[in-house]
Image (cartoon, rainbow, N blue to C red):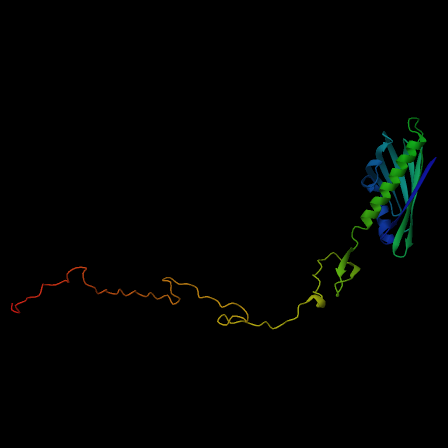
Length: 238
């Protein structure tokens, strides 16, 4: 007989873990040994399941009957199958709100092609995959552990809360800027010490935008030509 045992701590009540483990007809979803499971008979405290799968690469069948002892123990044993013997049990123990689960298996293969080392490896994988799947499934609906910033912005608090969006933390008071009255400077009065501002030139070259017309000075001077108009009459008569 080859004997293998494994254990896990599951963060869930023992009643929830027992309800999950007692569904023996869902073993193909959990283990890597059985591929199909057909429920043959179900009673109040027992059920019979027909399994088909591969043991160390060889196809095997196993008809097993499980006895339920809620909420702490489940025993199962092969009634008929290719293996010479196959049996095991689940033991559940509550620990401060959590559950310790222990799975023990015993098998006698009775097939010359399968060595004892190969049988131990198959049973070890059966136990580890089963316990890990039970743990993940039972803890799936647990509240998330999230971190919320403390009020002073320097420490963090860890709390278990439901899966909801976390409101943004308030702004710490020490980094809030104090309200200081700002000095408004009139655009007509530049601050002290600043160079005087020049007016923006407007079209026409003058600050006010007015165009000054240059007055042309008439230059008086002789010798540049006769004055315009009729020549004077020396006789004085027309």
